[in-house]
Picture 1: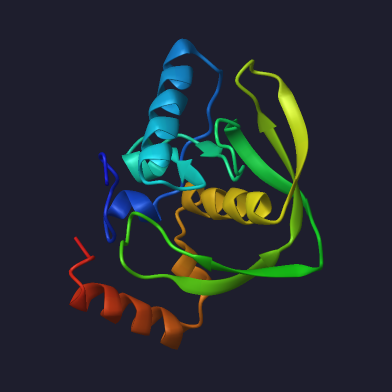
Picture 2 (picture 1 turned 135 degrees about the horizontal axis):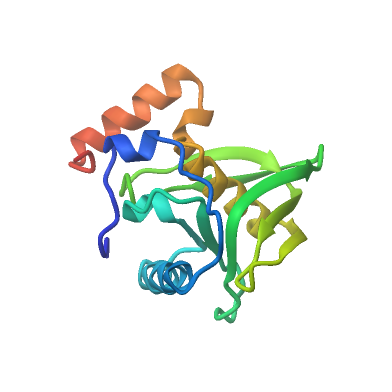
Length: 166
């Protein structure tokens, strides 16, 4: 279920999002919509740019029981472990295809939380992978940009054949 999710190659998916100057009721409403879309997919994270909202907002919920979404404004990785974790990544922006990527197994992220306070939080495992994936979206990058040129071209051709490219 796309629920308003942009499809590759929409230019907004290649455009860095603008910093969020303050947490407002509008910001909280955007987060709520993002969580609803993420849960409907179901997914473990979503960046505002995936919905066409060009603000540095992300939500992540890699919990088993769900309902543990972390709302982040202006997230940035301030520390990444040298130990890598491999995971199959995908995006509703390019449905039907995925790729195995290696990312740092753990990261420390600084962000503004729902109260507007600056918070630093450690994320490990799938949480860390999802946070990094969302930050890539906020920077105008898709997960497949981390692949070699040849693998990226193969993935995009496969997606085009499957009708996943807008």
